Length: 327
Ligand code: SF4
Ligand code: SF4
Image (cartoon, rainbow, N blue to C red):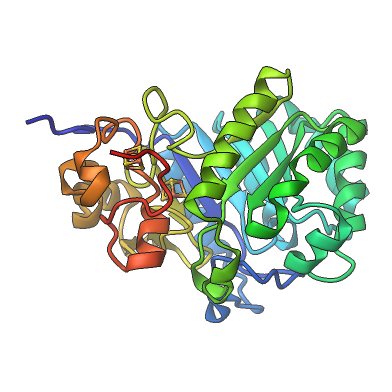
């Protein structure tokens, strides 16, 4: 019996450097009680940086939030991670007050850095999900950063209401000089749990996969960050296999969208959590998967989205409810 991922290495961290946010997107995967407007803990930031530096296999840090540009420590974090030789992604809603100052700072680190701006469709669709007056600022940020040579890409979450907006977003990407468009599935968890009617169906998902493949063939730079996109040859669900998420209060999760805490950096070393978490051990053994994912020939190379399985069934090992492959 094959037991995959024994000895797997932690490669990527999604770090929520702040819980503060200047928007209130209706699909946020965090809960209302996770917005701590007064948080300001340089000691914890230093501790997390130290933990990251102590694990050489970590190569990529995805800086998120909240809105990461609201963190008073963002510049120190970027500088330190750059000095640690880590590749840095910054995911922002693009509504950045001091855009010019931030751009001139980030420019110095552009060899090891990418800014990802969330765009959900045209102004109307975008602002339905992310709130009034959020679109124009996001567009300005993409344009401003790309004109200054800072690598920037667009990030779209796939909902029922924006599947028809993919070509529009691709046009924006080209017009604004962004490098590519990345798409992720919506996971109805946290605040987003109230938005289940926006969850795409299995048929929609099948359509999305085919559409992205067709657009790629046409030469577009568009990607679907999803284990099912290339279930045979892809990297599969990374949660606990080669990635983890850390929240702004030090809690560690298998994935930002799978908010089951497995430890806190305030009390435990990251390497210990990675090595000893019972949940991670279970996630690494895909024999634990249920239903279609258990029976699937792509179990080891795909594994389905554990966050979506959990959001819909409260069973982290349940089959991916949107998998379009039929057996
Ligand atoms: S059944 Fe599960 S493991 Fe197989 S392709 Fe679908 S999501 Fe992936
Ligand atoms: S749980 Fe879902 S969102 Fe998280 S890493 Fe796995 S596939 Fe990606």
